[in-house]
Image (cartoon, rainbow, N blue to C red):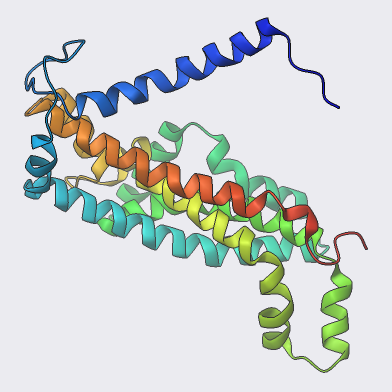
Length: 267
């Protein structure tokens, strides 16, 4: 039987949750306020009008489309490169393996502004014009890390004996990957892909240095806060971003929490 936590500890935990979630709750509240130019608390009234106003803004849809496109392409690149790198690091022994692993995770450990400045300098040096692909390259640097971390952990929990047994039974490389490896790492890849998509979708700092004149949804929100026009619209968009990013993170959590039961992990 587990003993109940002391009352003071429970109150501290509750206070921490309120501190973290109260600002998000205000975003949802002000998405329905009747006040257009300021944030009054409590709001003078509530309305659903801003949902239809937001749906009719072409600039919102353009920014949303760009964010979804960049996130999808970045995630696809990360799934391929992150999985291959994880397989090489976890299944091979070679000189400098730990150094390679460190270099792979370095982009997510560095401040985003360092990554952004370095990418912008590289693009300028190579005379690469800013476009959707420069944003994708910037996002892929940290999306690969997310997929790599999930994949390498699952590879290390998957027994190599399963692969050897499949090969001994006559399976070729493609069959071994499809019937043995993929079922064991599939949920980790799906979780890594969801996390990568969520991170790419709401990325601001790296995007600022690699987007040029383009605006992803977070950049659009930042510009709207600087030059406000229909403030509740910004909150409606922020509410949508919260939902788009939280749902993949929750799904990733439920997909990876049973990773210790990977086939052959005890061998």
